[in-house]
Structure formats: C-alpha cells, structure tokens
Length: 152
Image (cartoon, rainbow, N blue to C red):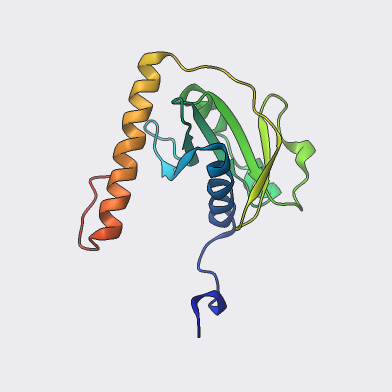
C-alpha cells in the first residue's frame, strides 16, 4: 500500500493549515505551524515573507470552531496582515470585516480577501522573526532527531 492510500491522520484545521502553507509559498512566504507569539496565544500558521513581512492565519474548520475563538484579536499585535482560513463550505460572511479570508483544503488555498496591512514596529518584528527562526529550527531538529527534546 502506498502512503497516498492511507487514511489522513490530520485534523481538519491541520489540513487547512497545510494547504495555506503550500499556497503561501507561491508568494515566496515560508510558514511554521502552531507558533506561540506570547503567553496564552498560539497561532495556527505564521508566515514570513521575503521582505520580513509577517502574516498570521487562523484556520477554522467549522462555525463552532470560529464562534469559540475568543483570542484572535490578540494576534493582531504580532503580524502585518491577519487572515482566516476556512473550507468551501464555511459561511464566510461570519468572518469579521477588516481581516483577510483564505479558502483552503489540504492541498492548496486561495486568498479571496487580502487582510489589511498594519505594519509591525521594528522592535516587535525583530522579536517575532527570532521566534519564527527558533521555532522552525526546533521543528527541523526534532524531525532529524526523534530523540530530541524541545524546550517549548
């Protein structure tokens, strides 16, 4: 049996995140999943652009998932643009104005509304790029060394 025939082990939100990360590569962005920008916050996708731009994407797999999200506004202070990623069945008129919207699945995505730009202060950008780099390096090391223990 080849790996394509095996059942998917990812949750719906994780599949959306995978499709989003794939799509953002076409904009020359690299992404990490489940990054903690500050205590009590964990973003689904943080993407870093070629000029140091930082985008945050929250993946919502259902109306209930979206309605239960009480922290999303806290993420705005940690990015230049903020987006929601949802599937084709999601009622996008529920999503707040002034945020970006991405339609995604596990294989790709499309930005249907660009999130407005709110540039980060340079000191905050520096901290976020360092967190991004450490998070990415920790994940890469763990993938290469299954016995690696993360400090996160």
